[in-house]
Length: 338
Ligand code: KG4
Ligand code: ZN
Image (cartoon, rainbow, N blue to C red; front, side, top):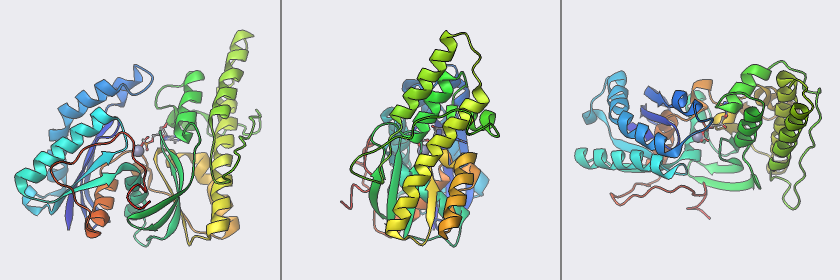
């Protein structure tokens, strides 16, 4: 079964053709990053306009790269939540028009389910159940993935997402957008123990996260150094900060693994590209004896291939949408199974 998938939840316009949920026949991304760099972050209005301009070409290119025509497509998958609402609406409306015009089923896909599915592309042997750590720009969740379409959130951030905490820290240190990515590039190899940041404490749920205090402490450190006219040791501050964020992610993930005893741990979302997370979580999982999966780097960030993969499983479970499909800025990953 060939699915043409569309992703436009943030600042990447993506289209892909994916066969049977696992084989990527094509994946095209039109990135807007150069434009958003000018503003230090994504400007939603600009993102929507750029999606409008790019989406037809990106879809045409995805079909051409896969060497297929619309006749070879069995369903159209699209990200419908969560994300920037104006950006999502461009993809959703395009997908609706396309599905209607060719008389093919329309499959709505939750963006974070798509991130988890990026691992199905990279690891053919991987199948649920497993424990997933979802770390993106806007979300940080520990998810019990019961099967391809059944999810249970067992831990979440109480405030900022891990990606957001990295982005804000990078920005205060003068690194360009996207901050997390640039902090990883610039601070890799720095001294992780050079600066001490307080480990956040979360009451009640031992699997929940909190990053806002950590973010404030790095902002205060940089402001204090600036006021004293001292140089900002970006490499070592960034390395220490990334290590602290990653330690929190690893700590909660390992705690959850000890309780839920999953057969595998899967990491998903933009922050899954982080080199420190890859290294430190691998060491922790090795100690625990649990297999650990990360997506390939090209599928860590937003892309439509992961949406095409998840769309296959949503369709197989009978989830399709009518032409009244709407987009939603927020939607729980387990909204339909709660
Ligand atoms: O999943 P994603 O591409 O978009 C959302 O769904 O939010 O995640 C974007 C986030 C940004 O915060 C970005 O800075 C972060 O992922 N990111 C990284 C790295 N690459 C991207 N954070 C840390 N290290 C990286 N290598
Ligand atoms: Zn994403």
